[in-house]
Length: 113
Length: 113
Picture: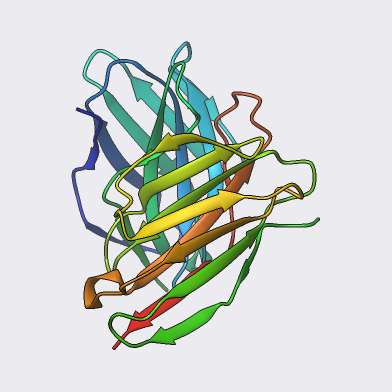
């Protein structure tokens, strides 16, 4: 069925380190993936997206990797800062659908100063 | 830039009461989505509207209903409230162009006592 899961519920890193947040998805029909950042009490905020015809996409300090063979998505944050502390969700969109996104379980990232 | 506006931000109701949440999408966005997020949970898709017509339906209880009006704002009506309905309710909007990027509001926190 449609589901997106995560390997780790929490991740703690030191300021300045690189962070890697992983996500496994199960629907091979998904063709669009997004990483969202959610701070406490706020709505999900778009970070970066990637389409299924790509395997890597870079933004400012963030990189998303997509491995369709094993249905794995990861978010890499370079030089993690305290302001990066939040819950990170991956979400998938299925081709030909209504654009609704199916969210994964979320990873809480804590950046220690 | 204008964002998705939700109201009220906080709402406290008793069991079996009724609640209405409102969502004003980003100007020119024609698609609205409703998500429910329980404590420590990922956002769960409830329902979506495109051009005032229901476009997709998720895990929305029969006690809930929603609609999109001519000005594209949407309302989520919840009746016979239960304790388990306590959650953050997010509205998101998109242009419906197929990009898949949803822009989320700050959410409405419903507490049922």
